[in-house]
Image (cartoon, rainbow, N blue to C red; front, side, top):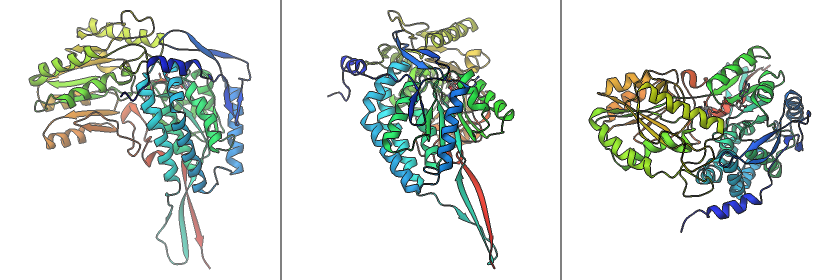
Length: 499
Ligand code: NAD
């Protein structure tokens, strides 16, 4: 029996959903002070889901005031860690209990498949709240080595009010990546979801109140980057920002910080990640599944997508045969149908961007072996999974982030050429290596300048392992793992001279 319901049943859930439309500030739904709203579109059908408050500086200001008040009154920031843990565990349970509703909401909002939404929201999102909740009462400070007449304690304190600015590709999962460690640390937050996908984070804010989070600790301000996003970046009473999105916008946040209060800025940004297939790799199901999901998972709208597949010429034909067979079997279509493998691109605008990159690849001389355009017979923002062969490392499609379902094969001769090409990028988020030779695997893993290296299987790791980028993919901060909490803490030394 399938673990999933039918598309009709998910559509029935959709027909009964309450679609959030206001900002969530100080524990309450609030319209934007300006009264402005924006249209929230389902990209799979082009229909409007509703009108959402378009927040700007005045709303961010209200949210920061609520967050500051809640932070200073200490109900959350100075609560016993086990109290914070209890709330985060209750929130994890509430997300699990509402997973279907949240997943359908997110699928409609983003065009992501219901399968992926159920997996992320039913399993991964609650795991984040649970894991960081559990961590809250197991993190110890330090006592420095001193003379007997001194006690020097090194303690960690919540940094204060944090701004969390999110992308649209994994809306609720990215919210959980930031929010769970920030709340566990004792911070108060002003969270801005991407304008394409505001709904699930708004519903989460309501569930957080039900879980016992004091009003004002979590505020969600939907709106556009240049208004709500910039207002967060420039706000002088926000103590730190954690941002996930494009490298271009990440750079703005450094500028905003330098022109306001010098707040620290954590950046998780784009990528152009390689998958290296050496000549000794078995071209088996595991490898082919990895190649497919590395390029096409979430419609390729994934920061760590391995679009550049660098394949030794000795195994290239075998690799392409299997990859093409699997690509042609992928089902593109209705995101609410659990048989669908690739849903819609997030917006009509993004679909056009991806299609223009496919044209650029063609005009640069790469050969299209599968896909290569919009999906026929589907009226929403659908793009067929596309495989290019003969990609040259100098082409724009090999250098710029496409963020769509495009897999490009770069043929190489041997490990040295593979490494040279894999390293030749401005980004440094992720890489995958396929080889049976453990020495080569270690050599490549150490020489690749990126935050995550997966060997013999495509993965980004999980909640326990830090995730972030080298070079233009990130800052020194990391999401996930115990490292994520550092973004939301200050270190204090308390030096006590005894008499
Ligand atoms: P984006 O940079 O366009 O937007 C991200 C967020 O920034 C949105 O909330 C947006 O409203 C806001 N924003 C946009 N312009 C702004 C401005 N001028 N000032 C302030 N805020 C502004 O990114 P996106 O298109 O939503 O997401 C796709 C990007 O995110 C890709 O580059 C992808 O690689 C990256 N990403 C990275 C990770 C990671 O962990 N490294 C994870 C997911 C996505």
